[in-house]
Picture 1 (cartoon, helix red, strand yellow):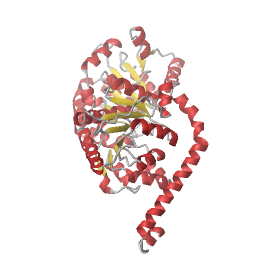
Picture 2 (cartoon, rainbow, N blue to C red):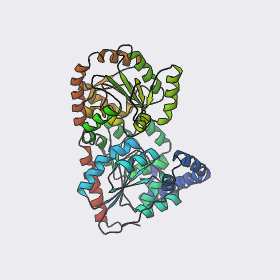
Picture 3 (cartoon, rainbow, N blue to C red):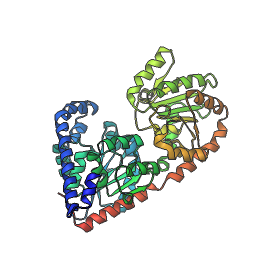
Picture 4 (tube, rainbow, N blue to C red):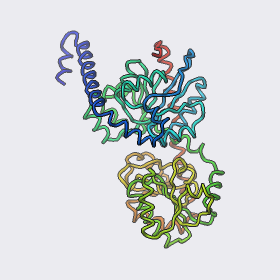
Length: 462
């Protein structure tokens, strides 16, 4: 405030103010890199381990890509960044809509986890070149930018790496944030390091936020209103396109699930939810002994705890991967999902569906995925990340929020005896999903506008 008051009264103060801001930013970035180079190299062995000992993914995190720059005149190169499987899935509608508008463009998509990387490689069209996201060391980023040579950087996740954005700034490469989420808690953390992060937020040409709450949080970090929009999330656009009834039939055959058997699905289970949902299901079996439970933790490292809990109680279960590999028939009431990328398809089997991250203070995951299959969804009270989705689902009677596992059991005990009546709520859930769709096309309009502005400015790759 003091500096601001001086620059308002001293002749030539705008130059002085800019010089001071630039000097402060350079100082903060210098300190950041000292810390990064002092302790950061100790992270590399950890990254190797987290890369699941995958040499290709690890090399990519060090900026070593097998990509040869395409220098064709007028062919834009666009770098999308996602974190893991969920963000990759959410980016697909935008990637496809952009490819329709700009089929000649080169599109790169980076992911920060080996799971996301392999999922993207398996699921995305060949015209999307998938690469691991580089670590934030200057020497790694130099390689990355030499390989990708982007005309535009599109963040599909609220991740802000200082050196990455410095490289974008120095090369005059515009950046956009889409599907932006920013909780009040995260905003407070960024505010503590405002000298480092505020310039990054102001660097974005446009910040397309998920909700008005997200927009207000980003505005509190010094972003101008003119650069922020509430667009929603593109991840909902592709859900209906992914619905394939033949996949449902295939899974029913694989898992030996005749239509008369009631099926419970617990997806994206976090921490204690992995055990809580097993407890609820065991109690539910006393009401409906023929029920089958399919349970998928968000992170596969939770599987051993679930296995131990079941073994200690002598409860029979089978692993999904084993059933797939051996073609052994499902006989147990419980199936544990020990691979990623198939939860959306498994939701199609469910009569009663619970979405995780909502009994634990995580904030929720994609509670609209079951809606694509005309399935209502049950979830807990921790909904910070999915408040808009909850609001629409609940207002249309397409969901059943519960306070805890005891209330979940009460709800399921009732509904497992009245499954035909749930179909109406499933139709309402799909109606809610349709209200959330249409975001990808709006996102592409923004991308096209920023690319056109860059072309007019005559900026070139370096």
